[in-house]
Amino acid sequence: MEHGTACRLLFQHCRVIMPHHPVTEIPMTPTPTLPEHFTKAERYQAILPQIEGLLRADADLWTANLANINALLAETFGWFWVGFYLVDNTGTELQLSAFQGPVACTRIAHNRGVCGQAWAQGKTLIVPNVHEHPDHIACSSRSQSEIVVPLRNRRGHIIGVLDIDSEHLNQFDETDAQYLQQICAMLPEILTAPEIA
Ligand code: SME
Image (cartoon, rainbow, N blue to C red; front, top):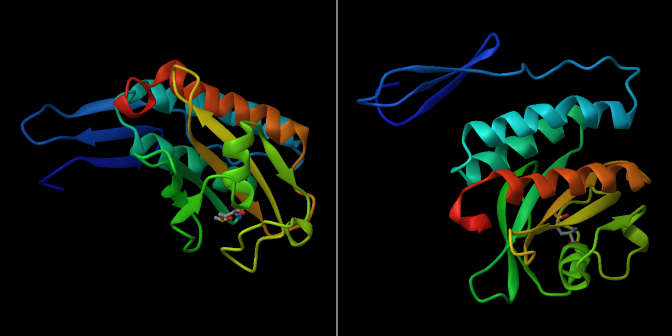
């Protein structure tokens, strides 16, 4: 690739190519093909160092890191939708940001849907059956259960949410809440991107 930046996962290395810059090789932990018998907690524990490595490698990049977190979570757990909604400049709505999965709604008002309520309440919300949630916003008929985790900046203000949907009922519990909150907390701790200031 001649222009821009190309990131290629070759064996266990990420090769970053930038025009007018020397080629640098960033050693990375490979995306693990985790043993099937691994528990949910063991899966999170396996990817946490990888997420930390990705964040530290490019701490100034915002969207790229959100996208890679989505990719790792989707690949590790097989969830059909993983993505971030971010609070807009006026502080009135969530707007769709980096995600993996089918097309989704682009704007969610404060205190509407599971995402807007997690934002308004400032806490993680677990929905075992989305069909029983009175204000669930159905972006896809495939969604059966959902978890939404607030994302805070370095000053502790909520700047968005991490939203995950499963095609199966009852897929999320306190283990997910604990580890996903830990992942969201890594962003303000590690990233230098202005979006998380
Ligand atoms: N179900 C969410 C909307 C976003 S989609 O699931 C991607 C909600 O109720 O807020």
